[in-house]
Amino acid sequence: MMNPAAEILAHRTEFGLTAVQVSALQPLADQLNVSVDRMFARQGQLSPARERMMRAISDSTVVLDEAAIRAEACEQATQQADYTIAMVRAQQRIAGILTAAQREKFEELQVNRGMQMMQAFSGTAEKH
Image 1 (cartoon, one colour):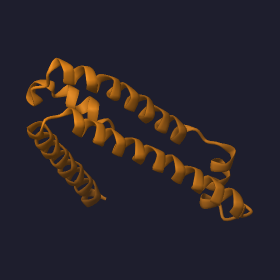
Image 2 (cartoon, one colour):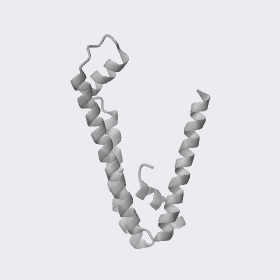
Image 3 (cartoon, helix red, strand yellow):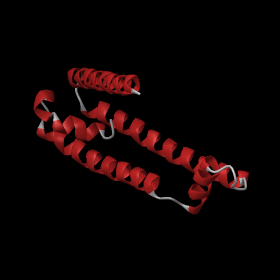
Image 4 (spheres, helix red, strand yellow):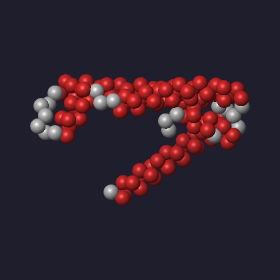
């Protein structure tokens, strides 16, 4: 789930969201969209350090630059941690906006989504 707030808003009728809840969730969804877009943009950019790292992995003739590889790996880990923290904070804010019944429904939606992803991954893995 890339944007839990947007996912809830997409199911606003099923969740029975009030206008107040929608107005609280919308800015959070917008903010998370920016975070997700930023994360994908960073992943798509091939910085010189990342390019060297990828070349070193795929080409055994490339001179190992361990410091550059470590720096790039640390940068990737920092970006992933930033994204994870943003998601946890969003989940906490969402929990404060939804009612207990809505939170339960959202948890069910997340579990079902996770199961679908696992099944899709499992099905793909079996074909290879």
